[in-house]
Length: 144
Image (cartoon, rainbow, N blue to C red; front, side, top):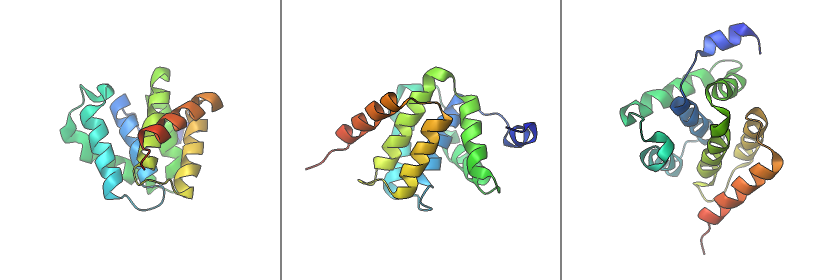
């Protein structure tokens, strides 16, 4: 990646990277639904990785991601920003969060599925690991 792109994106912490991941998936089909937003809020409130996150920063962090997405190369920029900010051991966590947001409406759109593929590649998640995470997501979100 060119250094000018990275300098425009700035650096973020792991909390912001995880939030950017969820916002990215939610915005993939150009419609951030109430269920997706509720999922993001629930994750930030309950997942252990967010225990030391100031929840008052959730809206501004999500807005920062949305602003980056408006750039001409926004999608690539956000994915690179996420990748650069996450320690390797949180990449699978980010992918799991992305899958949960995609599943929040009961069905992932084509845009969300394509974005999950891009995230899997960008975060260097192996096919087997991705399949396991996706299966766990289906199991958690199963209904009658």
